[in-house]
Image (cartoon, rainbow, N blue to C red):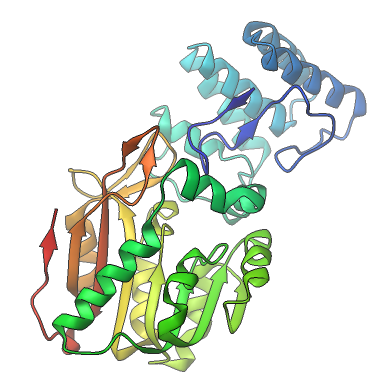
Length: 342
């Protein structure tokens, strides 16, 4: 039995009848007997006995009140049972016991209307999430979620280059949050030097196996860009495919990109969007960014739109997800008005 909202996201918590060891979502209490109680609760949940699982988990955290994994599981199961207040209380305890928010408790609290509305995801949470999915990430996105972000970005970049009267050829491309290399594969034929950066070592291992990149770096995006600023004007294309959905505040990243972008370079990215203003945390625990917010962030960074279109990048339970594909360039390099489409 798996309790989650999305193939790559959601609760970040699984319980399965076949779980016999400590997987990537489990942090031991330090007491084998307590851990066994926790796993017995997961077994009951896998059989559909959520009430029984909740009772055992409540007893477990009474014995081990700093057992963050059990608190998170209790929150997830109480939420499944419709006990919102009980779920909030459990997620708060999980957060208190886990300063690095390994499980994503702060996101669950935001989804339930408690705590900050759009909390930042911690590095620990994001790394764990993608390390967990790395081996099946490509199949999950392309086969189940009908993900086509790289192809959409390729088309958008080509359109922007045509409008500027330039060939689709780049000396250096930086692939932010490159993951397994889906974006890199779409642009490799048009790039002389390809750099990828990602927070997840397991995702980068998948990218390495494809042999696409000239350089791969395991790092936080903001920290990586800060280190790259010494090489101003280094990259002719910066790509962020299905990456900004995991960032609530895009300003630091976009500002960093503006610092390392060549004078005639492009920033191309996709986001999930919503009709309102600002940033919104979706039930899938991914962020949606309003168009007005994006325009303001780009403008503040000294970037101007070269292309903007509303196009579904992926599907969720068979329904296309509202998304935007954006291409921007340094304002002084602007040669054509922004385009938009449905």
